[in-house]
Length: 114
Length: 115
Picture 1: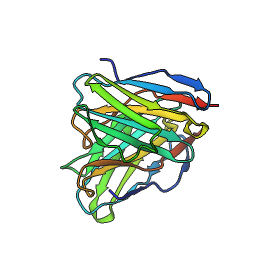
Picture 2: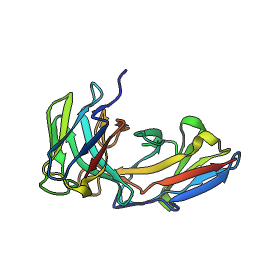
Picture 3: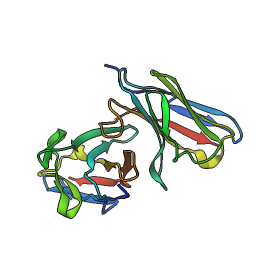
Picture 4: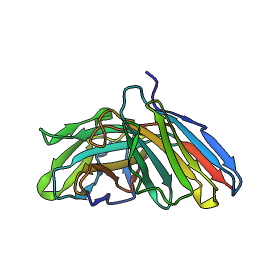
C-alpha cells in the first residue's frame, strides 16, 4: 500500500514568494497532521484535521500560514509570503483514528527560502 | 501531556551494548505513549506504542519500552545495539489534559553506535 505522499520533496524559493506544499494521506485514514521540523525548534505540530475539518490550528505560526483539506485524500499547506525563517522540513502524517493512534509520516518537504 | 522530556539529546553506545533512551512526561490522566525513529532524510516511523494493558511493550527491531505510571516514564531499551540503530528517536505522548487529545513530542535523542 502507498504510504503518505508529499510533494514536492524539495522546494527552493525566494523571500516573498508563495509556497504550496501538498499531501495525500493513506486511504481510509480520517486524521491528518502537518508538522514542521527545524534544528532549533525540533518537531512542531502546526495543524490537525479530523474528517477534513481543522480541529487544532494553535501551532500555526502566523497568518502567513494556511492549511486546507478539501477532501479526504488531499491537503495543502500554504505560506504567503514566505520568509527565510520558514526554511524547514515540513512533514504530513495521517492516522486512522485521531491523536490516540499511530501516525504514519510522509517523507517530508525540505523548504529553503532564500 | 503538558510536557515530554527526553534526557540526553545525544547518546553514544558501543555496538553490542545496551541502549537506554529516557522519556518522562507530565500528565494528570492516563496517556497514550509512542516511540518513533527517524533515519536521515526520512519521515518518522513507529517503533512501538502503549495504549492500555501490559506495561511492557515490544516493538520492531528488538526495541521495547516499559510504562511506569508512578515514575511517569516510558524509557526505550534494546539489549544489544546494532550499527543500523543509529538514528534519531522521538518520544510522543497523547492525552486529553487540555480537553482534547493532542500529541506532544519530545525534542529527540540522536543515537550514535560506535564500532
